[in-house]
Amino acid sequence: MSRSDLNISRWLDAHSDRGAGLQVLLNGAVLADVAGDGDHRLVVADVKLQPDTRSRLKVYRGTLLTSDQTLPDIPSAVITFYPDNLEPKVPAVGITCGLDLLMYKNNKPYFKFSVPSLPISALEDEVWTKFKHKNEHDLTQLVDSLKTVPYNTLTSRSQKLLLLKPEDAADFVDKFKDKELKRYSPITCATTLQRNSSEWNSVSCPVLATEIGQIYILDPQNLSILHQASVSVSKATPSVIRAIGLFDVEYRILIATREGLVCLLRRGWLEGRNVLQATTYIVDMVIMPADNFIILATMDKTLSCYSKKGSKLWSQELKQQITCLTLVPLKHLSMTLIGVGMKGGSIHLYRTRHFVDYVSIPDTPSSLLFGKMGQEDHVLVTITTSGILDIKILKRTADFNLTQQSTASNPILQNKPLPLPKRSKLFLEQSARERQNPIEMHQHFQQDLIRLRLNAARALVQSQGDQTGVGNDKELIKLSAQVLGLGPKFTLILNLENMNGDKALIDLTMIFHCKSSIYQLSHYVLRIPLVPPGLIYKAEIKVEDVSSDDFQGQNPVQSVKVFCTRGDDTHPILAATINMPPTDLNII
Image (cartoon, rainbow, N blue to C red; front, side, top):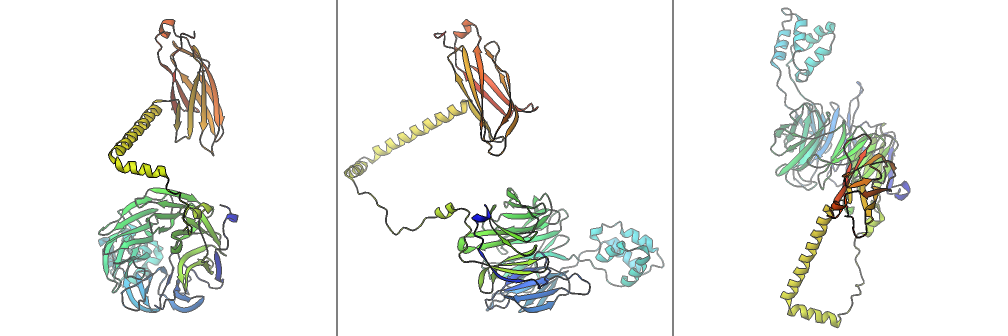
């Protein structure tokens, strides 16, 4: 579909703030009614990695910044959920910072959840106990003993100690040897899971994923742990997490990991199962709401779709690197599009695998959001890598039909009735006859139906037994044959058809085989250099019946076998058996 076929005015440029200075991670922004007044706001976790600055939580009402608060650590994800059913319903904002989930309500800190500590290796605990009496033990030997413990099971304190130079290790040990040794795993991603209702403003449970692969489903009111499970048997670090279903009924949690795995966790499972393995690193993942298909964006510029069981349905290779994904639900059009943010400042919209529209923005998008903002229902919010905040509004007249035929296929209500013919005398007589003889009419109908099925079955058996027209669906090649003549000399006409409209057939060879005591051919090997796409190569072979007169009188049914090979390959890509007619002795 060319750009001229698209309606390039589907979007209105509402706002573009080049001085916003926002640095946002993949899941670092949401659209929510955080005040409970029906006015949806943009909530952004502004990441600051400089040592002298701190990350901030910002809330935009329209284009105006209404709230700006500091965060204790670098945020990894932002979620919103309704903790209760009290009126008026006001959602809570959850920010994952390091080990904690910070809960805000009415733009004020409300509650905090910290992930539980993990068990510590006995050897590591013993080494740090000996560090308190390091005069009696060699510090170098104790540090070397820590290297025997798997690195990923060590605490962050021991990991940092192993990375220090030997001359700096003593000062580090003196600083931390009297402090309690604890091991934690930071939160890498988060999402929400509706508890007992599928309404958009029903109670939802926060779902957290940690770096070592632990999944925590929390109670939305007091943030206690309702369920705990691990992502997979193998080592897997979650990077993107999505949840569908209801916690009290049945749910599915899909986790994309940094190792390229997509794992599934269902109700009651204590350990997830691997659904699919991507060929490269996963950038982002979304779940289609209707059929629960998995949409993956990978580092090799590919957008892929998988079924619930992990079977690949389709893939689309793009021209630019994919940076983020978002769902674009359009309930008034009964469809859900896939928004794909790409490097260079382009956002493509897909309906399944079909490209339907694109949006240009000033820079590469780092986060995409689509939903209600303010009083508008269809708003596309983009935050770029350079900190630009761009807001676009979808026109109410926008249409994303793929072709004009799709609009014509929908039935249109007719105000004028159809011109039905009047009942004729023949029709009335036929109706009266059917009412008088229903049993006989039904029997005749059944006989005709059975006769039709019998003729269809005979035609199927005949077509399967007739080898004069065979094909290879995988190679998209078809061979048909026609025999001319009454004997003893025949002309065999072969038609080799290339059914592939894009690729030519190159370096093919036809090999003929028959009994030398019965038939003699003009060619036994026929080389075909090229068959263009969609065309037919025609070959003509002379066949002579050389059997004895006594054998000819028996009128035997003999055949000529044809094999089609490619290059030096000994396995044929196509084989056919051509039944030759018997020689008519009266003609001879």
